[in-house]
Image (tube, rainbow, N blue to C red; front, side, top):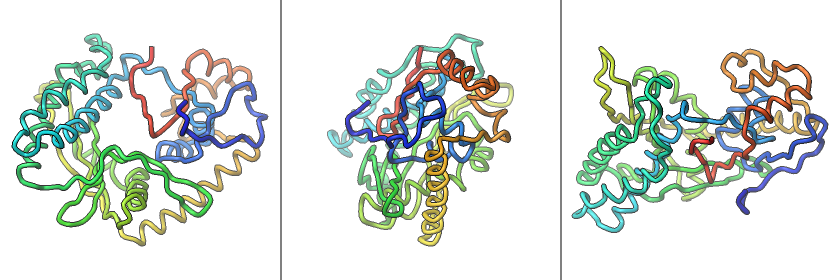
Amino acid sequence: MTKDFKTIPPIKQTFMPKFDRFEPLARDSTAICAFKQCCRKYFFSMVLGFRVPKGGVMIYLPFGSCYHVFRHHLELQFKIHGLNGLDKCLEPAWKEAEKGWPGDPLSGSSKWDYLTKGYLLVSCVVAFNHWKNEKINGTYEVLALEQPFEVMLDGERTSGGKADQILRWNGDPWGRDFKTTGKLPQWYERSELDPKDQFIRYTHGEGGLIGEEIKGQIVEVLFHHKVTKTHNGKPFIRSFIVGYTPSQIQRWLKEQTIIEKQIDICREEDIWPACETFCSYCDYHSVCKMGTERGMAAKLQQNFVQKHWDFKNIDNTVEK
């Protein structure tokens, strides 16, 4: 645990008191979305810090993490080489990205088995060419990279996150977030953009960082796909614009106060109700099925890894 990671001291520990607690003082979109899905999921994942061992089946997590590293180091290299040395930025950025690669998945191990180191390299080259065109055309002025933020919501509670980029586009400040997905563009746009807590949270938080009104988020998505009869499998990039008005931000702030008060009630009583409508999609379903508190605790210890959630230092590497 890093020294700047601050937790909320538990008020009461009557539910699973044997476990240490790591509830973060500043909650990001991952934490809030977990609570909105299920109070008990929030307790297991954010308060107790239990996460699913990823293994090779979830290779899309380190794939996305390595891709983020590549995009970050492209900008760092640009600061060194400038506009006349764009081609010099590719190799050192790739060397940094490949350091986090855990090894290729076994063929046939999952639907993500095409996400190999070779496919990552192809994706990074696609991203490099996209980035190079941006620089040549002067599309964006990058103001900040990988910038963590903690800003006040209501004078008592704190909102946090880590912005991939803050930039200026056509004179206005925007955030830019890099994503990777195996979904088709029409399904991604339908399910992953707005309403989305992360993007409006980042818009609010980034404004606090630079002291200007952020217009919204440029969500730049790398789409990847397995080779099929109907798809050539080649990765490609598409950007989506998600803008917010000041009134939308104010409404979101009021909503966050309500959600935070609901979390306060659960914490004060140390009662975290399960939301059965989410069970079929939940990693912790096998835990709740145990019924007794002792059985649930044993299942957590047996099948999960206890590692606190710190949005400033997100680790998406494969856990053995």
